[in-house]
Image 1 (cartoon, rainbow, N blue to C red):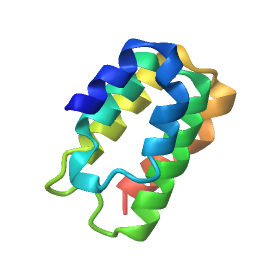
Image 2: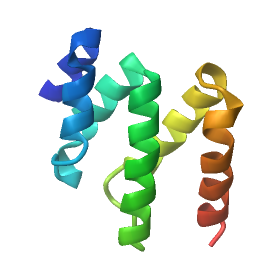
Image 3: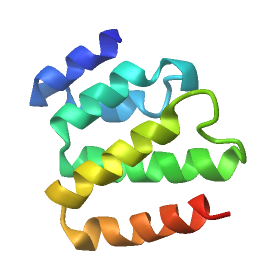
Image 4: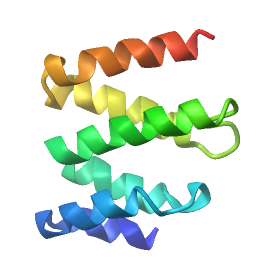
Length: 100
């Protein structure tokens, strides 16, 4: 949960984006908290790319890790804080994946 501190300041935005590429699955909780707190356009885009990558590479994505719950929380947040142009295609893709 130490990574959650990174959400305390915009100065950590780039570090958060970098860490999304390297932090292993079981250690992302604090990083997700930081992403949720900052909720910048760049972090939103990076998360959409990473969630897409993680889901495509792991047919069992989210089971036992809680990452699916984080994804749902991010989608709910983005629907109120980001533009539809940014989020709609990702949300539709998520709904399609979820129904499989």
